[in-house]
Length: 385
Image (spheres, rainbow, N blue to C red):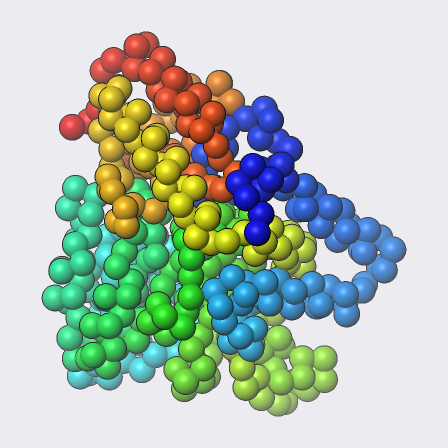
């Protein structure tokens, strides 16, 4: 298995910068550069090489399936996480006695908006509330009863890197007959995922963050026994049993997860995604998680010593691959870091510092030094608490 230093060598840009914004966009790898060139060459030389392009979409599907220990037959290629969430929400039956969707205040807004839109179909949305950057598992469990149709739980929240107790929440949901959907976007690629033991019924992730791809492609896994009950209303020719049969009067849904697909997939994004996932799948997920947790420990201790208040949880397993720092206005702090070639991700009331297998101790030390310099220049901007 590839170790951290060898993994880092695949990212030539990291010689000049510190990349701490994987929660927004992963770093560019040498394989992604090659893959994008291959796509451009295929377009130039093949003109319209659809067999090759569809094969690449399947390679991306297979690589994601391998990452989560699933069969490729149970993975649909979609355009984004919002589309994946819609395919889940729109194929639920919201009966009066079982109409609730449970979500939380740290859900990514685009996903929460899909659940809220399901109210047009009769759903009722319940939110577990955030307190000091945490959504308590106990509160989630209290909201889950026999009236719940669907429970949405992020693997890791975008807001501050809090990691949710997916297995425990899934167990309670299944006890009362509810289904569970996991947004793995902020964890896939750094947190080991096995859908056979996680307990969820649906799981989705896009490729542009920790999976080292670009925008335009995402993946939806569905447990076979629950993903075939209701036919999706958002559909298209790639959801058909034989897409290239071109039969406009036949609506025959694919017997596998392809039934959740719609139109032509993002081919360029498929090339990039397959390349990024190939790197991820050469690592041991346990090594990746341990490496990231070790760096996060050093980073958060250094920031606390400087007087910064953290928005992210302070310990594992509650903390994911992100250390979030409270800031009254994170944009100036982000600009200060960027001037020193350190790239973070400001969002809301915090600046997010996300770590990947390609980061190292030198990245963390350089970042702590930059935060010290910012504190010295802007002492009133260190904390909002």
